Image (cartoon, rainbow, N blue to C red):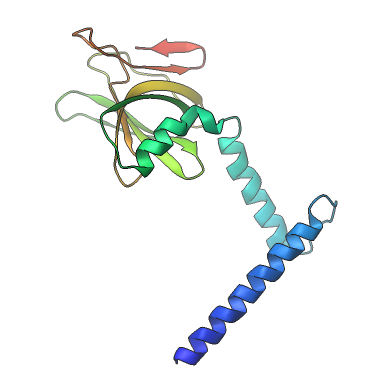
Length: 166
């Protein structure tokens, strides 16, 4: 049984190497896809790329680094694309919740306090800029304090569609 697993693994590696060599030789040519699988793969890649296009790596480098280093309680700024709108969290202070993709590898959960700040008019696909406190979690992290601070010490914001919510 171990021999079959080893043979299968070697075949898979050989196929991957052949595919990457073929991709490298096709790069720059206008070769048309040969199968529906190739067409579908190209469409999916375009959709993923369009979701994160315009998100410069340097804009979110501090957020990415905080995630990799599992750091929390950092005041950070960044930008992203709204991926999903979630139901409000009504336990204690009310929070508007939504997911934002900041890179193909990382999504943030936003918890925007709507007892202290106005509800944000959002749609999936909206591009936002933000400042708030980052809290690490293994799914990508949480951004909160995305509003003014009643004590005036620190405060965050969210900018979307030409409007700033504090």
